[in-house]
Image (tube, rainbow, N blue to C red; front, side):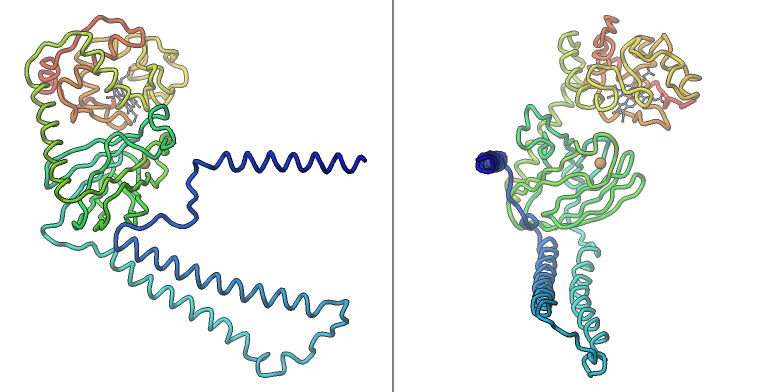
Length: 407
Ligand SMILES: [Cu+2]
């Protein structure tokens, strides 16, 4: 009786577990192997992988077969007596040399073909007419500059609410690339080490501040290829996905045209001398702040002390506490607060950064964008200074200021 009900409970448990297992995975990708390669280099790598796995599988089967047979056929209950003279025969004498030689031969064969492929990857072609894309890793987003086309794109992860099942795999602006074109990637970093890695395009090299590393690719299939930053680069490392959109050269040309129109329109708007309303500036400023600044200073402006200062006046970061000596000496976080203090100093820090700290210069943003961000910072987070900064003020500050010093 008792045993029967236990058995029944076990079966119920198994049924539920099976159901949950199946239901939980219906949306998951069932990939076991590498994703399908999209460049000749990636295909070469894929083939080495497949060949190696085949050899390894065959060896595994042979070894397992021998071991299983030996265990079964020579078991004690059969009264098997071990061969006492094995080491005296020719096989006993030579097997310890021959078997490793055989294995080494297999290894060398694999390594030989890998060497060929490595050479093709590592020797970046130097064709004059190769397309060039400069890829800059930032904490924590990617910047793509199409050097021949004069187009610049910023690419950031899409928050979970919008990305859904593609969370941490999707970006706002993908890296659009033409197929059947030799492309040279120039990788570098604006801060710490990053690494631009899209498995389907082949290989990666680290992006290091102050250096340029090169990789290259010829994509031969249209499609969307996803990757991510492959060097630990700080708390938001996981939020640096990469999306490559490979399109025909015709579609690529059209895309470049659209980007140029977009950039020209933004520049014209910023330089138009228009006086903006506080509401418009605050709205633009919120988007720009959330996009560019919130990774460190946080959405609510409270920062992440002691590394990243709050931009909220009196923002839970009393002077002297948790603060390194140089910061205290500079008095940045004391009562005055940059974001509620004099406007010129605030503009100076945003435009020129603070040398020697993670606070980078933001002077690549246009006057309107800087004006909007600074207006937002001075009024959000209960700062309520009422200040409105216009693009013209930023233009003036750009000319006037020297880089902020770290002392
Ligand atoms: Cu990174």
